[in-house]
Image (cartoon, rainbow, N blue to C red):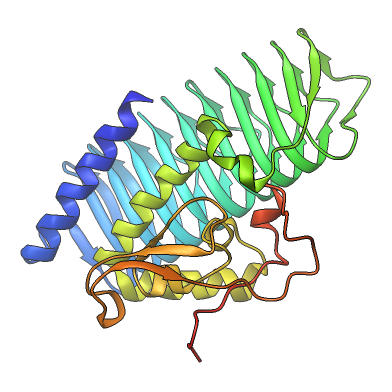
Length: 328
């Protein structure tokens, strides 16, 4: 996706400027942040509770324990938090990561979301692509192009005007589903397709991908990881609040893709480092993180009752834990 590099570049510039200069007027940090009315500039905000309830003529970049985005946003939305709810009219892309994600929005281009629980509600319309990853995923609404989902439990009841690719432990295509293209799925179990569901194309089952095959797993994994570039920069901008939201993911949901994609290791956020790759036990540590000089740190997985040959979807499973070597 062409816009991915543009957004990443903007965030890199933003991160550098904030580290070197004081916060500008459009950047709000506090326990509770509320933005209302007409805002004629980009919004950058972080707090325990963040609410955007107005019309924003620009981008919205937010992080918090609880995030609510309502009203109208003319450009992109990038959000990270323990609980994130988006019910706005979004002009461009939405990229969101967190513990519990709920989207009931009109989105002008792509929706990319990763979370412990991901719900795309019936009032949602997406004109671009929809790429989702998480533990429990429910998808409704009307999706204008392709749908790609990787998760533990997946339920589809949306209209999709394109092809659908699903990978999960449990996959259900409900009666309300209207798929106007091919359905390709990967699972160790048989898919459930309600007899009332409409699928105009072929239904194809492919083998499950395992973690040694992740590097060849296609664009959806890499695009989901693009969220984490944004999240890592949010961690630099707002380390306290994002650290709290990561802890919130652990205690309030008990499962989180946000933790799972970095091997279940919250230290990768609290110590400001990025995952080396999806499901990896190693993190790329930023210079100065935890007093170190940067580089690669090993974060061994905790006890895992499953096989060491863990499938891609169970990599984000709630069973997998992680502890920093030598940490308390």
